Image 1 (cartoon, rainbow, N blue to C red):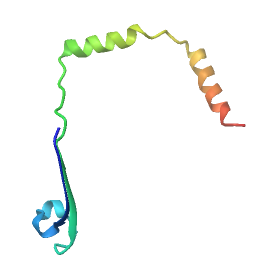
Image 2 (tube, rainbow, N blue to C red):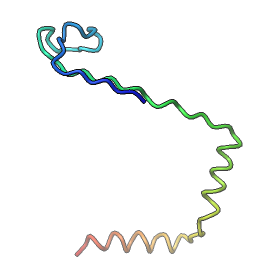
Image 3 (cartoon, rainbow, N blue to C red):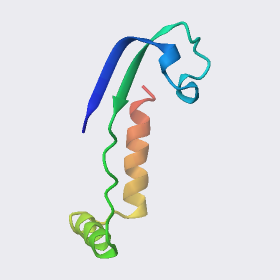
Image 4 (cartoon, one colour):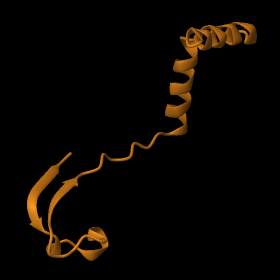
Length: 78
């Protein structure tokens, strides 16, 4: 991913749509960064990821979950 940074750049050289309400006579810092490409997953890949995540998990009953939450909450009630 690329990044370009320029300091003390004349705001008048920045397109109005990007400049917003900055005065054209001001100096600005311009930073342009390339975005990471969007990773597209197939249904099979997504299903596989979900199954892998579920595999390492131990089931928790509602009572166990409530007890954990209460324990964490009670830590702050000192």
